[in-house]
Length: 278
Image 1 (cartoon, rainbow, N blue to C red):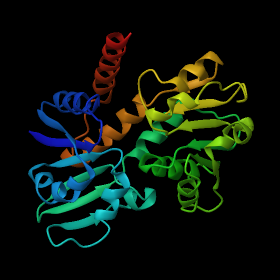
Image 2 (cartoon, rainbow, N blue to C red):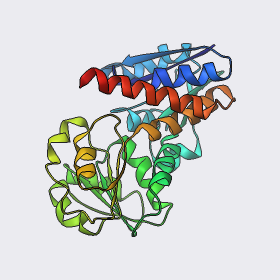
Image 3 (cartoon, rainbow, N blue to C red):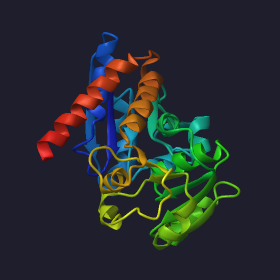
């Protein structure tokens, strides 16, 4: 049996349990995948105690950078290591628990971003606009830079945008209020903003007619609705979730699941969620 879970905040609607249950079932395993909604002050204690009863766990907002930092230095209660993917992204979304105990941090969000962008290619230009500067945005930025795209990071907090942009040479940054001016020549816009910012997207009329839009969130989001109204090529975060989850499962178990079976389970779960809220 796989014992795993997800840590973050406001994660009750996560589809990760469905993803990993389907992955395990597809290869004849079972999975006990739990959701751990943690207040900030509990994070370090959880890593030192509850985490070590698991085979591994995923990390979502707001802890991807915090866990990276926890695993970046020696800890008297457990050994730590960062895989090359985590070092490349500067954030952790997957942790494997090894004997010791040893917590090894990875970033499979890179796989998620690559899979989502692959669906949208070919892009009509070289300018990518990234909205948001959180933990997931770090992996997105790394994936965009490796494709030699010219990236502009926009965030509500200009200091956060500047800090993210500084991780890679040639990346520019602006305040989110400059979105309309910056994105007029965008080949792709990736929305990594939290749901609280959904009201920001009143129109996307300024985007080029051949621009692509990717939302890291899944489900019915205002950003994608506006993009679809423009007739733009769009992708929500379901494929992002699928690809990063499969990569996490492989890290924990060493066994590749049936990718099609996992994708079907996620599509069906998202459809049920959309029907329940319509």
